[in-house]
Length: 259
Image (cartoon, rainbow, N blue to C red; front, side, top):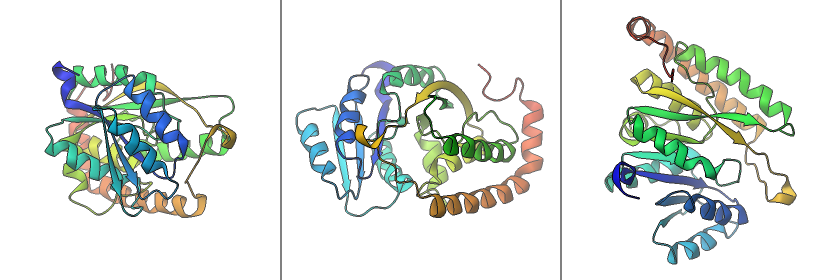
């Protein structure tokens, strides 16, 4: 990749994604270079397949963490390495086939045009999408909208995004949260607090069946408790920042994220 896009890379965290990881890597590489993968302590052999692919493709790089640390921790590892290597923006996507690799170029172009912004995927669900997942995220999105004073984050959970690396690292390195499933929402909220403008682009989300290689590591009890604790932290942070957020909002028109 040359020009402005030379400072953008694709970053994929992965945990026990099976054969889907290698397929996702191939799909991402058809749209962008480089593609970096952080294998987060996987025990299913997918790390070996990923390393083998990278041996024959200079556009791929694979990091293998010895133990599972969580999505946010895996991304932090990759973001730190990317920042050290001179990259300024990272498109994050899941390894399980849910995210549309064919739209990488469109999201990167939007980021290149607005490097000060975060480019957020706005999920378009298939009719077969689990209702409990679709309805549940509406609750989380309502809280995120409140916590950002309606800054324009259309979906707080969809992980197909482009982040400005320096801003995200500045947030993550100051705290010990955002290391697991709480990463996506907290990243969007805290970046909005920091003044990073959200720009939303539609992107389909696909829930694969087990026979298609689909895998989910979301645990409803554990991870919903994690999200409740996360929103409790964010509400406190929102209240403390409210006068400043109101003042900034009054000075910034049109609403955040407007095209």
